[in-house]
Length: 128
Image (cartoon, rainbow, N blue to C red; front, side, top):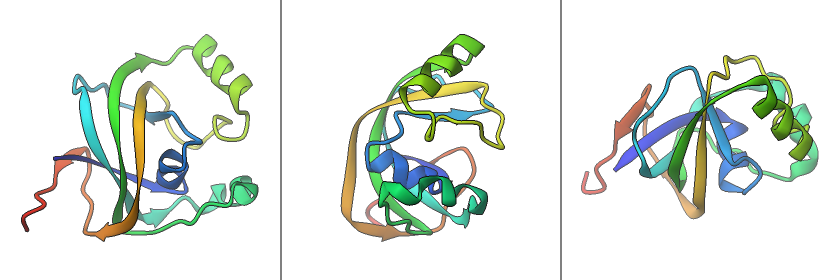
């Protein structure tokens, strides 16, 4: 199963339904189900921004799943549209937002699966 490691609080925003796009500096042609892994590193500068979202951030675990349905080259117009939808979630970040991976069919897991993350899209074997 494909997995994407995402820093907190971004991973929890996805599995709690607040964030529908994951931004990356690289394009993916992959379409289909992925597991959402909350990495060990925290984006500490962003926690105050989401204090009213009532999310629990877990580190170093697969916390849910989603389906990648599209990969969009981000334009100023696209960013402006997202910021109108939710100026807090889609407000300015410290990262390069070249591509937006559109996520649908998000499911939050009741029990996290603790494991070490990796860069890029990586594979997790449930049998191990």
